[in-house]
Each structure stands twice: as C-alpha cells, then as structure tokens.
Image (cartoon, rainbow, N blue to C red; front, top):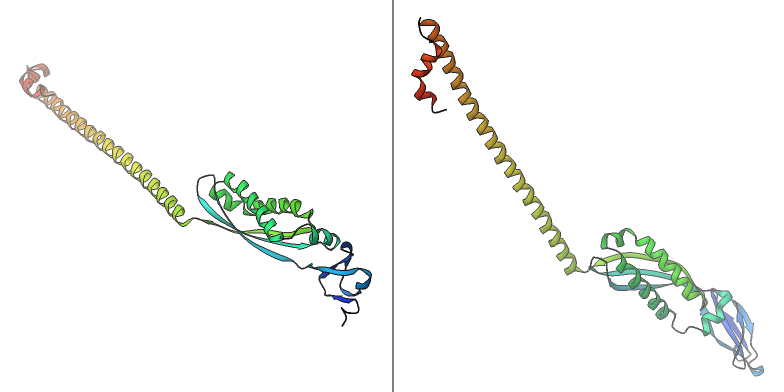
Length: 237
C-alpha cells in the first residue's frame, strides 16, 4: 500500500538510491521517504552499509620454491557518502576485491622465503590493505581490515623440504663423527709414539746407570769399556 502511494521505508544500516526518470537523484538514508512514482521518481535499489567479509585462499610460491596457500580475510563496507559510486560503478564487489588481493599476494609472497613469509604476515596484510584501499575507494568502498590468518605449505613440498633438511643434518652429523674419529686416531698414535719414546729413554737411562755403577765398582775399567761390552745391545737403539 505504501509503495502504491509512493512511500518506501529504508532499514537501519542501509541506504536506498532514488532515481528521477532513470537518472540518479539522491541517496536516501534510513527512514520513511516519499517517492511519487507518477512524477518519475523511483527506488532504484538498496545498498547495505554493514561490514562484510571476503574469505580468500590464494595459491602461490615462495622464494625458496615452496608452494603455499595464503588464507586471508578482507572486511569491507560501502561508504554512505559514496553510495552512488558503490551502487552504479561496481556490480560484483567481492570479485573485484578477490582479484585485487590475489594479484597483490602473488606479487609479494614470491619475494620472500617461507620462514620470512610467516614472520612478515602482518606486514603483508597491512600492505595488502593499503593496496585494496586505493583500488576500492574509487568504487565507494572502504577496507576496514585485512588479515592473513595462515600460510599453508603444500603437504608434499613441506614433507620433501623436511626430508631434505633431515638429510643435510645427518650428513653434517656424519661429517662431525668422521672428524672426531680422525682426531681420536691421531691422538692415539701420538700417545703411542710418546709411550714408545719414553720406554726407550727409560732403557737408555737404566743402561747408563748400570755402566756408571760398573765402572765405579771395578777398578781399571771405564764407562767406555763397559759400553763396548754392550755394543750389540745398544745397536738396537
């Protein structure tokens, strides 16, 4: 009945677009409005001002060749003061936003290695938000918040990377063991040679003491005579 009389009701957190003979005329705020259809006025449609959320999953590759899926949330809303732009200039808002954030993620994440991408999630999200704001403001929308909630490595690629890391760690451990073994063998040989040298020195010292004792106990003999008697024994040294 109200529409027949030219009255419409605009709900809270919404606006309506009024046209006059098919041309944009005004943005109608929440409340009751009179649109005399017989004078060429009509309600072209409504637009919600509520915050909406776009869920994004973007596949890309990091600098160290790990395929990942970036999971992001984009919260946006139409600006009341630019409702005519939001209504007329963009018919599929989520599609445009989805395309824009995909382009940004695929341009930024490949510049980072996997660990750096995880560490810089917030920085990537803020930069993406700034880029989206520039792109969407001309269409009458504002970006409330952009969040990168997760970066999911490809399962097979992640497993391969972990196996490669484990192999590198094992090779490094084997290398350390070989070095330690070689050092142990070298130390063992050094100590063995040192023991033999000390053993020979002890024999020489005992022989010298024996010669000195003999020469002092037997008159008319010298250490030289005693050494001649042991010449064969000394030759082994």
